[in-house]
Image (cartoon, rainbow, N blue to C red):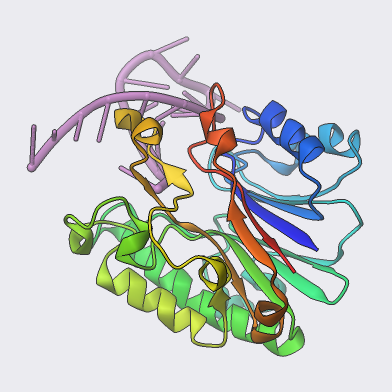
Length: 261
DNA sequence: ATGGCCTGTTACACAGGA
């Protein structure tokens, strides 16, 4: 089974890229983030036309996640509130950042983790609160589904080797020690980075800033990940980053990351 | 050090991204 994660930065603007990619890359499930569209305007037809089922959970202008699959998915869950009580969730489902479904024995959780803006800001605190709830959510998912694939745009580079430079990393959003420690804590329930099963060296990135010609200079970050439960991690046979779509005309700033097991 | 660029908006500058 192949599952891909791709932050497309507007599914409507990137529609051509995504449909083209699906037709040339045979994946079972494509997890999209930053769809930036309300559900009634999601371009589902474009995907059903090429043989994919579409499940989506969006909002106006910002955020939004979707699952595209060759076979129908079961038990689609939208938001933390699908399995966590309302009082605990609070306002953390206001932004549409979580969608999940089951294919065979595998539960796939597709996440768009908050960016956090800058360290100490209100959005940064929101990111940390969101991650705390995520830990509880994933612990529940893992209990129900021993084969768990958690993927998406994490907006955190786990290690210095996941960034083109180690300059000022401690003070930067997505690489601060607190963010990294919070992510490690989430993963401590029993999830491992699929990419690092196969590749130890640095210099592999999934996001390049639109500014400063960063893709051409390869000044990127690895912030899009697949985390697997022990059972799936053992089964995993590859995890690769496809940098090609980042070189297209009017690209997303992220590229697809695929895990196979 | 700063801002560079891109997307969507009851748009015509701004918020948000990372």
